[in-house]
Image (cartoon, rainbow, N blue to C red; front, side, top):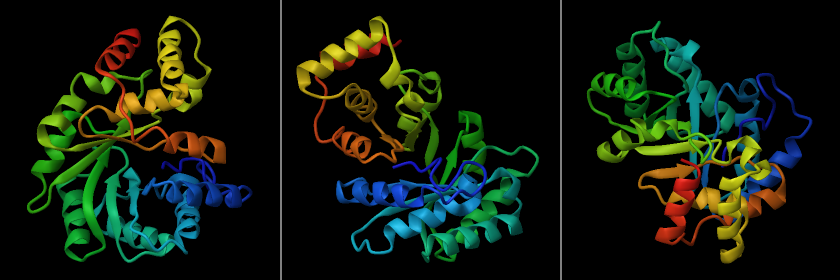
Length: 260
C-alpha cells in the first residue's frame, strides 16, 4: 500500500487521518502488508498516520520509508532516519530508500550513512527510488557490505518507460522493482479507447475489474511489486483482490500489445 496524500501533500493535513487509518487497517487485514511512506509525505505526518494504523497490528508487516534528497549528507541522513523511526513508532524500518537522486551530494557519503543505519539495526534493507540504471550502479559501487534490494519507480500500463533499461537490469540483478502509481493515478480507471476495450474484455471474462487486471498484469512481471494507494475502503478491497490469480499467457500478451 502506498501512502502519498495520506496525512497531507507537501504539508501536514490531519483532516482525513481517520479515513486513511481505517483504509490502511483494512488493507492489512486483507493481506497487503507492505506499507510504503516517506518523510516528504505530509511533511512527515504520513509516517505518523502509518504508525496509528499499525499500533494494534500484531502480525508481520513490511514498513518502508524514504529520505528526501536534501538530507543525503551523512549527518542529515542519520538524523532523518531517527526522526522517521520516531514518527513511525518503530525501532527498525524494513526498507529505507533514497527518494530521488541528488548529484550535489557524493553518493559515497550517502551510502556510508545508509550502511551505518543497517549496522546499527535501524534499517534492514537499503533501497533507492527514481534511479536510472547508471545511478543504481553508482550507488551499489559505493556500498562496502550491503546490497541495494529495490528501486521504486513509476510503472503502469500507461507509463512503461522503465521497461527499456531499468526493469531488465532489476530482473538481471535480482533487485525488486516497486511500482508506484500502478494505476496511472486514476487514469486507467477513466481511460477510453481501443486499448481499454481489450482490458475490459479480459476483465469481463475473468469476473475482475479493470484496475484488478491492470495490477495483475504488473504483478506477473518477475521482481515487480505494486503499491497502489487507496483511502476509499471499496478501492482497498478491489486492490487486494488483484493478487492470488494470474492472467493467461494470451491475455497477458494481448494487454501488453494493446498498451505498447
